[in-house]
Image 1 (cartoon, rainbow, N blue to C red):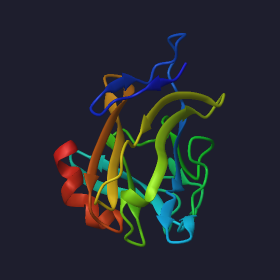
Image 2 (image 1 turned 120 degrees about the horizontal axis):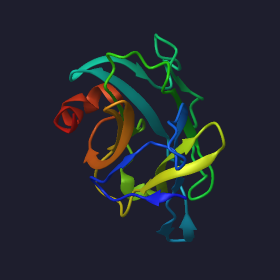
Image 3 (image 1 turned 30 degrees about the vertical axis):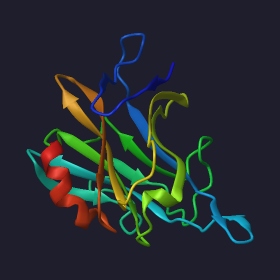
Length: 192
């Protein structure tokens, strides 16, 4: 059963049978918004990029994104860059896999961000979402939908963080501006 998350909502990443999740996929999907023009509606391709920043006690240790597809420890993997989107409410355009059992014990949070590398704003995007999937069985656990557009070029989507002996996901949904994860670091820090 999928939980449709709202901004700031946290959910436990325990399985319904009481077991713990071992591998999750953070999926990102989007479509270019149709724009009305003189000769009808048209779309312009939008290149959104998903990134995962690994933190230990509020210090960024590593990042996984389209130019660094695997974390140094091998626990987090990006499946590759999608330059145009198109999945919208269907499948994922970009995915980041997290092997929760391999995440080093000192890493306490993984923050997922989305940015428009080409600098287009979210007003040019529709049907954008971030979802968490149990990679062992393909079951969608949680979904956070980006509502409305905005004059921003990035979004701090969600974080997966340690909670006792397990993990939780918190939907952040914080708008930001920047073309890369590096540009977003000052906006990420308040959410740690």
